[in-house]
Length: 63
Figure 1 (cartoon, rainbow, N blue to C red):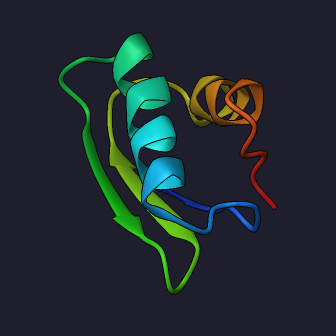
Figure 2 (tube, one colour):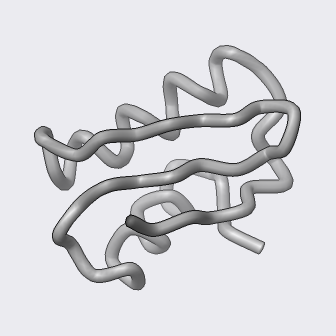
């Protein structure tokens, strides 16, 4: 399980974009977004750095 803080994530569109970015890499990943806390938890076997890169490319760089 990987947890990231995404300061730029603010709305439902952001939630969808983050979820889609993760699922493009790992369609089986479980993605739990907490908008008020601006965090995302990702259950995936992929390396943390690869997930962080995908989030950054989608416009939500982890803090």
